Length: 262
Ligand SMILES: [Zn+2]
Image (cartoon, rainbow, N blue to C red; front, side):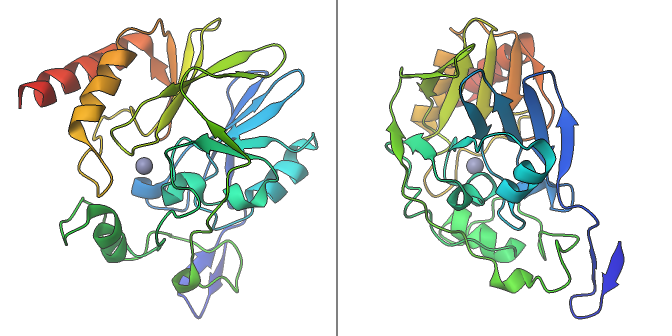
């Protein structure tokens, strides 16, 4: 890294971190952003179609990273929901798919300032626990100005509904509508491989966000109950590391016990 005088922040040698999971799946992360907005980008390659499941903050170009690092056909971007750390780079892709209830074309304001993000996502001035200050610890290039960050609206090229199947050729992902965190949050379920991409519906540690401005606890309880019915052995979450199906059932069960009672 080298120092950037104007921002007093270092410039990252490389913005994205690339973690191979298996022959078909790669995890891409943004290590220089605060953990609250450090979303997972899942790059899943199929026989006839590739996906990026969520697209990061959009501080640096994800499509350029993919083109440089993998030199395959352009993937379809599937966004699990429209929060800034998942939708950020979606506008860079020709194909963007999202649930029909998720407002990717009106995602609201984006910011890299913790105080502002608390206001935007928490609503009514209530804090949702975003750390104060700047949410990036480095810059993608010396001229980057964090104060100019904006979340770019995206018109989906395909509006997904519950139960429809995304066919990658050698792998089929079923769209599972899981409202609660947001109205149009989705998971993608690979029944044959017992794998589930969960976005922000479930991750571990489970400091799950169900009191954001567009959240709904009753919907969240129903979504967790639904997750308990799926045969899952591996979870690829929107934040943090992959984990086993038993852990998914522990987290969903505990959530239902806590919220359905309250
Ligand atoms: Zn979210």
